Length: 408
Image 1 (cartoon, helix red, strand yellow):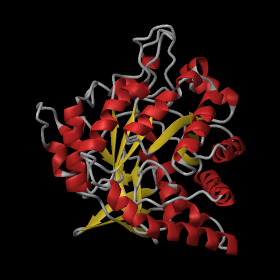
Image 2 (tube, one colour; image 1 turned 45 degrees about the vertical axis):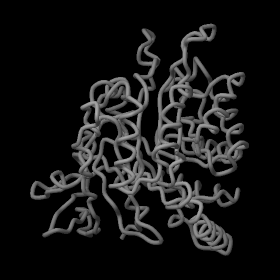
Image 3 (cartoon, helix red, strand yellow; image 1 turned 135 degrees about the vertical axis):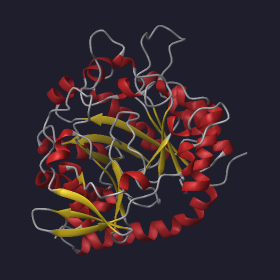
Image 4 (cartoon, helix red, strand yellow; image 1 turned 30 degrees about the vertical axis):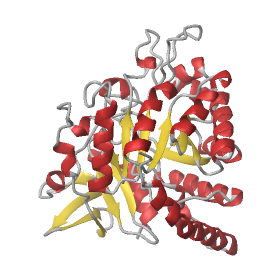
């Protein structure tokens, strides 16, 4: 019998088939291929303690067709059956929000502005990443942003539309975190009119802070050190969290699979930006994002430690061979190897004393650091760490209530 976090890892690695009699596709959230394409699965919730686990499970990718896991429905209840053992794991299917099907005041479908991934709102704020526009084919090999932006979602979002969608997500879906991301948008370092993705995010951050409230995160390719004042401007605008898609620790893997990032910014730029923003916002309010399952797991572990040492917390994504990417035929990772990675993630965060799971933000695309506790043997050190984070969660409640209030 798998523990909840083990089931989550298994489903990320093996995907899931949907029984023909199952009506999850009719009541659940639609399968959306927006942003980089990682959220192209079916959203489910796995019962767990101290909190349930949200997971965006691959169901349309090629490898999912051979999955031993089968989603079945009995009356109004859903369960995932492991056909190898016959074991049944009860899950719930979150209903699609009504606002997905509504229009903004500019007559744009709200689901083309932003989508929920877990209980947070994800919005890609600009035209497609310039790595996709390069004749040199500089796009990251696992990404499909260039195929989604302008097709499955609006290529440019009006600030007014973003406000309307963020407000609907807050009022109807209980979302307290709005995450803005963008790709690479800086071609000519001598051109003052050429904009970083960071500057593109600023008007959206200000608007959501003023009119919606909640926590706000920004993800963009790091800017040169001389432009670090742009991080300061975003913090002043209301940004609570920065995330940096570092992707891979192994230099060869990074250069081969992220040619644009390797040629324009390099690995060190991600850590310089992490260290700077972590000092500005505080430890645990910045994250470094890496992909597990492609490079050797020892390299991934080194990457986890580098992120922690920079004052950030690691967000580790299990590689998904998304449809339309150059890596869509690459095998998905081995679940046992991924369990080892996430057990190491827990120990690395504990050793550094990083606060994890303090805010009630559920991200369905990754195994969150606080969910990894079930992968390690209980000890005095782990119990002390869990107690510390539980205490911080209680103390954070008034702060969370205050952050929900719009600044206007």
